[in-house]
Length: 442
Ligand SMILES: Nc1nc2c(c(=O)[nH]1)N[C@H]1C(S)=C(S)[C@@H](COP(=O)(O)O)O[C@H]1N2
Ligand SMILES: [Mo]
Image 1: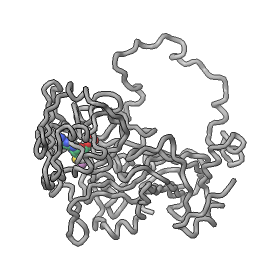
Image 2: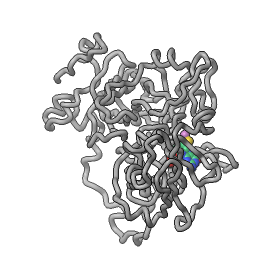
Image 3: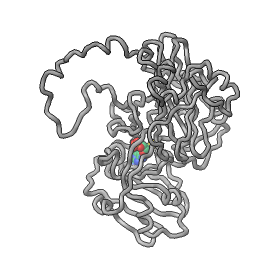
Image 4: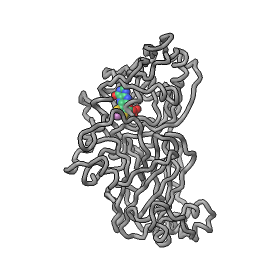
């Protein structure tokens, strides 16, 4: 088996890689012989033996199936793949539904599983009555309906949306024993289709002195956020479709603002007003909520960008390794700066690292799935991932991050209370000799 090149940031790594258990990704890209050479034959992944016996015809192979429904539903066997709710009793307060990434694959979050944060419940908006107005420092105020917007050139792109409070359980001084989705479930990724905000702003004619806009949603909160005009002209969209169908009510039906790579909260759902202004509006959600208080009591004025992050989705807490052998460590990486350039994976708590394979197309400000073949020898292991983006930024190591940003003095018991925001350091999972998985700090 060939050895990965040494990593410039870890002088020790090239000595250890020869012995350690991460398998060179090139081994997996090769032929079957290469797989066998790397110890990746079928037997090592537990698929030999009984699976090769002649197949038995089950009931479903012998009878006519059910009629096809007009709208598809998932297999009833998948009923446990659900978002977890912060407000299951539906009290009149803010509510979160978290994506359980450890139960999903690929890069696009299905609409039924896309996370939702609604500060004031999910409004029931009649699309025929919904209007979007653009006004303020413009030559000509404009008013749009769903029908008039549909006549504009439409674009499609993928993008993640991530709440600034995502991953906040990792600010706890003790690792909380919760799933990957309980930690990182306030980020999801979709293909969005809509009209470029720049197209609409150009039609309205933005006053050259205007530097900001403030967007307002139509739910009872009337959530408002300021967005720099520069960002609005660059890649913001008024989105009408999510993964090919109309937006989900919980994700902004019938139209939302998409601000790729910026704090989730700025992606105003049910958007009904865009007012062009000459300075930020300093609204509740950009001064009180979502302002990061730093150790020492200072805050940043604004901290819009969601920095590079990655997390392993398989195997993680809730999965169980049944026997030693081959496993595919898999996860997602994304960055508000642009594309992911590299993901490194460690199976020994960060002592040595191997470069993961990036799966499929690597899109701007979108989930990229990474894979790292790994042979588990049955001994305790700690798996973790670290991502880099095309701007050169990387996830800070935990010690570095905590010294800059702080952690709680007591263990956090309720993951729904956000002790802090914008966590983008590493997530690690400890595997014991029985193959049981725990959340750990490496
Ligand atoms: N109108 C409106 N827009 C909103 C919100 C809201 O409650 N109302 N929540 C915000 C927050 S806090 C986040 S993180 C994102 C979440 O987007 P999603 O619910 O589509 O995942 O929407 C933002 N936009
Ligand atoms: Mo949020």
